[in-house]
Length: 102
Image (cartoon, rainbow, N blue to C red; front, side):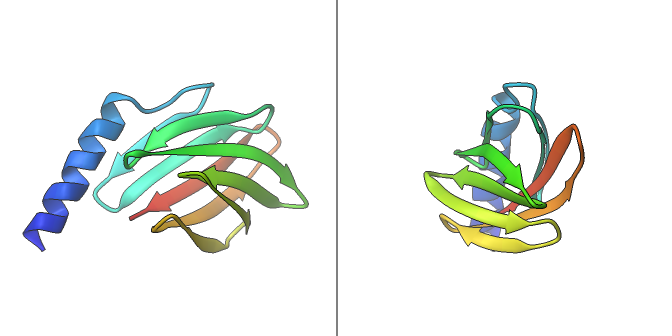
């Protein structure tokens, strides 16, 4: 358990040092990261040591690429991608709020 917490803490430290990008904002804690992607255009961030990128939104379903794996997640839903749990918390006219957990 201590080793896993140390790994997560190290990943979060790396993430906080290089998070954000393309107008995205990232908020990380011990239980994962929340990313607010701008809805217009493609945006990518580095979270938990991997790249997460919003490709687009259609019919309240976000298409994301996490660590090279493409997933489609409806608002309120979750899926697995590259060993991470990826969920979409909300979609507005201006942003897509995504949660990434180890």
